[in-house]
Length: 169
Image 1 (tube, rainbow, N blue to C red):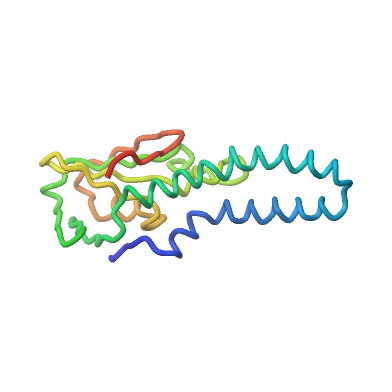
Image 2: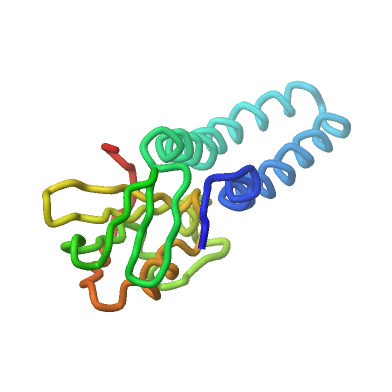
């Protein structure tokens, strides 16, 4: 299965933020048309600070971080991973770690979860020679399931985290 970071996969990761943004700015526009200007300014400034710090900033930081620190194209087959014409088989892989929020592991999404909780996670493939390969969810939202299904003989470790920042390539 060929996987790559595409516009479609990026929009899928950003879909919750896009929906929240459309609703938020639609409501702000409605208030702009119907409220007194001073009241509108107070509402806009107070809600925009929340929107920016809690919703927009974490998603943008993670999205840019994942674009810069992961492989953009790979091929996954049964017990075989191909990246940039380098083939890694199950014999060369030591372990696979999935770094995600607890909401991703428990499939708990919805209003109580932040936009990045379920859609942003990454996989670190530790090779026996000490090399590490990072694969982000921007490649495919179900990359963890794809890797788990194709590498059943390798130990897969789930690492819960609150903010899943990918640090190195």
